[in-house]
Amino acid sequence: MTLFNQIVPRLSRAIARREDNAAASTAPEFTLKPVYELKENAEAWGLTVYLPGVAKDGLELSAEDGILSIRGRRGWAKPEGWTPLYRETVDAPYALSLEHDNSVDVDKIHAELKDGVLRVSLPKAEAVKPRKIAVN
Image 1 (cartoon, rainbow, N blue to C red):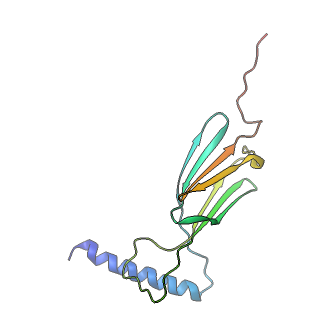
Image 2: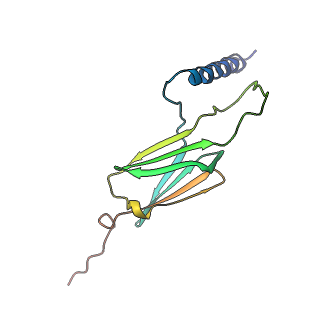
Image 3: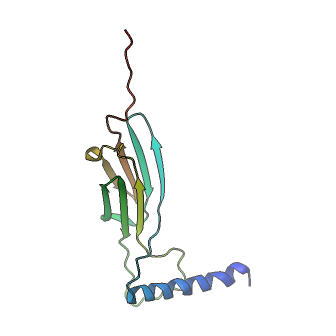
């Protein structure tokens, strides 16, 4: 038996116990931090967040007090009478909070979700955009 085979069954049992205990207790909900990319150009920042299994109705996006918050919940439900033997991922919601220094024009934020990939355009506020100054 390899080291991997020795570890994996223990992890699966630990996760199953944690899910059972989470339903019974009032502990904070376990969340996953999704993979994301942030790119910048002169006009805006582009945020790409990978949320596999999340549909539009399971997604919450909010921007307030200098924090952009993204929460996504997968729409998968365990079939009746089904007992998993092994799972590679935990069935937990995604949560991501990004702080900004109010340089984002919150009224012009645009978001699009397609095939589990969320693309968010965060336009820069006018005061932050670079300007050319004419010299006389």
